[in-house]
Length: 158
Image: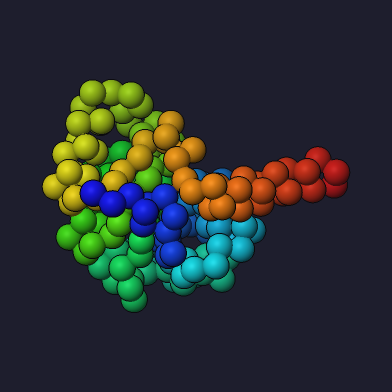
């Protein structure tokens, strides 16, 4: 398995993209925009068509290209199916937000970890849990963390 596409993606899709500002999907898109991610970014949501100027599509299969990485911001029960679909499409890897595990009580659970591991293995793709989100290339991580820090400082000053 090659983790380059997950750790240093050239394109990203956020599954669970939402216009609701209090969601992980919205916050993830907002951070990618603020960080000026230089590759294509897509949202995936069954009803949204655009969030923060980013085009959204109903499913991963509807995207105009196969992204290097996906961020999953949907309930935990959907994660194995999404990782399976991503693998069939050839996505390089997946990362869950805390929401994807917290709402079902699967945080750190053997069942949740086993389901994700099985889906990722079957897809021959990398996958990370929320506690491993620090895994990323130095430049990618610096860009995202820098954008979050700038926004936090601006909010504190404002």
